[in-house]
Each structure stands twice: as C-alpha cells, then as structure tokens.
Amino acid sequence: METKNMEAQAVLTPEELLAHWQGHRRLTRRTIEAFPDDKLFTYSVGGMRPFGELALEMLHMAEPGLKGIVTRKWEKYGDSHKDATPTTKKDLLAQWDKTTEAIDKLWPQIPEGRFQEIDKAFGQWEGPIYWNMMYFIDNEIHHRAQGYVYLRSLGITPPPFWER
Amino acid sequence: METKNMEAQAVLTPEELLAHWQGHRRLTRRTIEAFPDDKLFTYSVGGMRPFGELALEMLHMAEPGLKGIVTRKWEKYGDSHKDATPTTKKDLLAQWDKTTEAIDKLWPQIPEGRFQEIDKAFGQWEGPIYWNMMYFIDNEIHHRAQGYVYLRSLGITPPPFWER
Image (cartoon, rainbow over all chains, first blue to last red; front, top):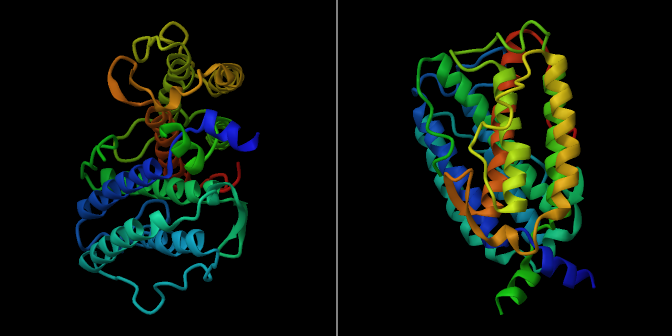
C-alpha cells in the first residue's frame, strides 16, 4: 500500500532532482564568476559573510552531504575542506567543478528508497533524506541570492535567475 | 515500466512537497513580519525592489500558479491581485494567510500524474509541472534571502533559515 501510494503520487525522480540541483549549481558558478576577484572573499553587505565564504558553505554541504546520503556514514560538518580551503576565485571555481563531477558520480549510487529514510545529516540534522537533500539545495539558493544583492550593490548585474 | 520506475525511485510525495512549501511560506511570513512597517515597501539595497514587492511576486505565483497546476487553465501572470494589491504590512500578511489557506485547499486537487506533465505556466514558461512548482518555491527562497540582506543592512536579525 505504502509503495503503491508513492507510485501514484511521485513528484519527481532522483534523476530529475539531480538535474535540478546541477542546474542551480551552474547558476551559482556563474554568480561566483560575476564577482571581481578582489571582492569575492572580502565584500559583503550588512556585516554578513562575503560570497566566497557562502560558496564554501555550499561546498561543505554538497559532496560530503551526498556521500552521507549514499553511504549512510557522515563526516563532521566542515571536515572535508579543512586542509585545502580555496581562497581565490580560480581555486574556488576549480573546487566547484571537482564537486560537480563528484556529484554526478555519487548520485546514481543513492540506495533505492533512501530518500524516504530518516537520518541525521552530518550527525546533527535529523529528518527524511529528501528533506536533507532539499535543504542543501535551498541553502544554496538562499545564499546565492544574497550574493545577488552584493553584486547589485557593486553595480554588477547578476546572472538571470531562471537560466540554469 | 515507466510507472514502475517512478515507484522505485520516487523522491518525495506531493503531501511532503506541500509541507515543504508551507514550511518555507511560514518562514517568509516571519521575514515579512521582521520588517518595520515603514521599510517594507520602501527600503532596498543596490536599487533592487523593496521586500514588500518581492513578497507580492511570490503571491502572484503561489495561488494563481497552483490553480493552473490543478485546473490546467492559466491566467495571465500578475492578473490575480491587480485590483487589490496590498500596500501595508497588515494587508500583505492578511493576503499571505488567505493564500496559505487557498493552497491547502487546492493542493489535494492536483490530478494524479500531473507533476510529470509538460505545460506552460501562465502561458509562458514551458516545462514539467514539478519543475514549475519547484520554480515557485525556489523563487520564494531566492527573494526572501534578498530580504534577509535588507534586514541585516537595517541592523535587524532575520528569522533563522532552518526554522520552518
């Protein structure tokens, strides 16, 4: 019954969610690119973190989070890049692209039915896996949009939101 | 075969997506509330639209968009509130709450299998319905996050992002 219910009412497939995420990640990449090199890790509005730091948070969640979803083993949040944190736009984009490939490789390994399992992301945030996965994406949309305001306040037009 | 595939790999159910959306909408409501009355429709950063206008955009998409998903008939984007556009925080919140109720009422009427249909949202934006639905949510996250920057630049702490 449970399974039948999911069948009749599924919203989207994991493949579609992956395409959705990678579409958002392409837009975030363009947002990183839009920042002048000397502003990416220094400029912000209202005492918030610079966009480079927000992008690093996205990287902390993306591959390590997906690894936790695939393997059911979670590293401590923030552990992944502690030895090689990008500090320039070039290095950040390189890390971004590495993560893009890693995501494409990891995604098909998500166990069947995993999205409906309850788990504690990074040993901290308990909820269904679909919720955690959407949190990673939502958090990226949220912080990228803050980058849009930083860009506008620098007089730079951000990439169109609807283009993925 | 197609259906079997969806069954095995479903990410989340429509009920879960509704809960996800209404969770985001509760957070957006708290963001509206956090603005001082005299700043909601006047204040912005970098020449962008004030948060009240961004919230109106969300309302233009939410109920009219969901109506289009349910009925397969789309009104022109922006038509819904043209005669009664809220211009105060109190009226905006009242409209927000009305929309919350309307969404809860409309959602169960989404036809089975509808999320995978291709359609043109508001007669303009073509794609699968799940994509359009996620666009409405993503657009809300995106603009709400811009409101967070406005609040920070006013010296006001926005509501916690993870609380829904």
